[in-house]
Amino acid sequence: MQVSVETTSGLERRVTVGVPAEKVDVAVENKLREAQKSVRLDGFRPGKVPMREVKRRFGAAVRNEVLADVMRESFLEAVEQEKLQPAGMPGFEATRNVAGEDLEFVATFEVFPQVEVAAFDAIEVEKPVAEVTDADVDEMIETLRQQRGEFEEVDRAAENGDRVNIDFKGLKDGEAFEGGSAEGQNLELGSGQMIPGFEDGIVGMKAGEEKDIDVTFPEDYQAEELKGQAVVFQIKVNKVEAKALPEVDAEFMKAFGVEDGNMDTFKAEVRKNMERELKNAISGKVKEQVMDGLAGQHEFDLPEALVSQEVDRMRQQMMQQFGGGQQFDASMLPAELFKEQAERSVRLGLVMRAILEKHELQADADRVKTRVEEIASQYEQPEELVNWIYSNPQQLQQIEGAVLEDQVVDLVLESAKVEEKPQPYQDAVKPRDQQQG
Image (tube, rainbow, N blue to C red; front, side):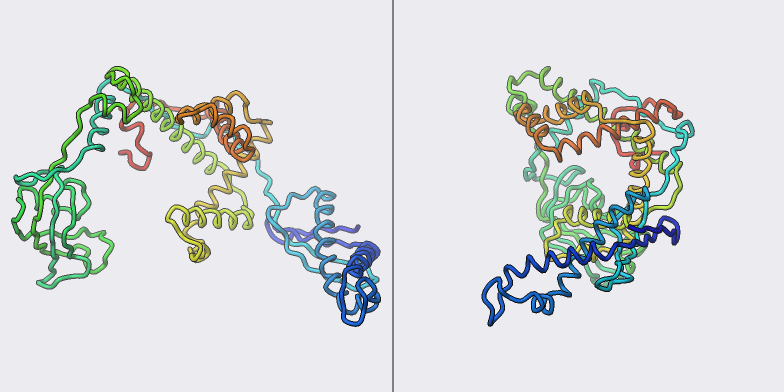
């Protein structure tokens, strides 16, 4: 088999492969003989159709089928012979395809880039340092009470935190505008659900009361015609409800898995969950910064085939998140929405692969076991989940992948510039993009 390799541009390769005529012709002949045994044609007994008739009717289709197989097999042999690493599927073109003559075809594809792993000492990481205090536990219990509170109608003026049922109509220059009216809408005051000034204007109103509120739409409001516009809302309050919070009693604790109704046990359980959340939040922030550092350190061409695959994966993921049905074609989502994120993901994947190869890292079995047990501990029958994960290669592979990422992060942190930043629990568990400064 003759093979020549040409670099057309960047990561693209054009491989020309010559395959001996005998290999193709023998395969075609064998396939036609197999077909002859089962071909049924009028005027002939089953299995007795003459070969010339089989060739006349099916020869071209069989040859095309054989060519596809031969090109695929020969391509795999060629890339192994030339020590190439294809990224994505190749495109095939038969440039000489005549029975009795050597086959020649061209395969065009991209290869994986050569990634030189940079030193990690230039990467800077700010690591949050926090602990769960008694006050944090008390605040969390209060949050749990708020989440389980129920609204009850009251006969008084509305206050922040109350829920009101309202009719409203928005007027701009005395005329109603689209989307500015509703009837019987529930609104929790202080939630920030409406534009600035709207909810504040309702505070102090009672059921049955009507009032006009002057507000100005923000300059960055989504509706172009309302940006920065002064409007009047005619408000009618139908009902005022206050939130009644449950007592932290045995029944309340039981809802969170504490059966003995003991306050110390409950607080210990809340603290344990908060500490797990804190650990995961800190780990996630550190990992995010390490990944940012690795992505910024490594510049190289990306295989477009891999980027396209990642874009398609992200499209499908978005469809699942928003409940897109089978009638919705994911390809309708513009690739530009995902391209930057997809390129970062592919770049990091290739960098991680290079680091794993350079440092010969394998998923640490003990860390995998610990991760599996941590996941299982959140379920009622953890032993069953542990057994299921270990018997499910796909699930186990995902966990091993996550552990390997953690091992790479640890490796980077050994050399990176790490600055510890003490902060309260609430700040430490907030996503990075929600933190001040």
